[in-house]
Image 1 (tube, one colour):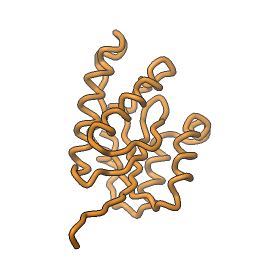
Image 2 (cartoon, helix red, strand yellow):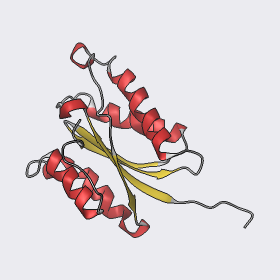
Image 3 (tube, helix red, strand yellow):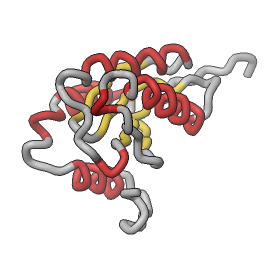
Image 4 (tube, one colour):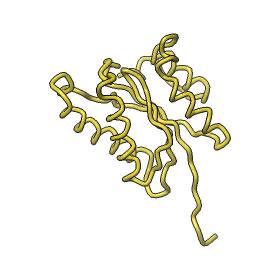
Length: 150
């Protein structure tokens, strides 16, 4: 085969360090745009970015030119440096070390877009910890509760 053709949709989830509620309404839209810009720069087309006070969700297409680990390293390091310039209350901002990344069936992309769009309503009923744990169970990911939150 002479051509490499790739279309991998990913739903990426990660939280602020210690799940601190630092992503408020004054910064969230600018943060999501900034995250999308990083994805674009790395040729990982962002489809939907959103979240809540203590975490973000990114639905994107993973470029065939970058490893998932490198994408997350770039997203987290650049956005963390950027957000620290956005106010005195954000000077100690950090992302949690880990992340979740889940493949998305192309037929389910619209469902994931709606899910990310409804994060504020969703989190009136469920904590981030319960949400993340549900993803791990849904995708049959082996995990040790002692290590996923730090």
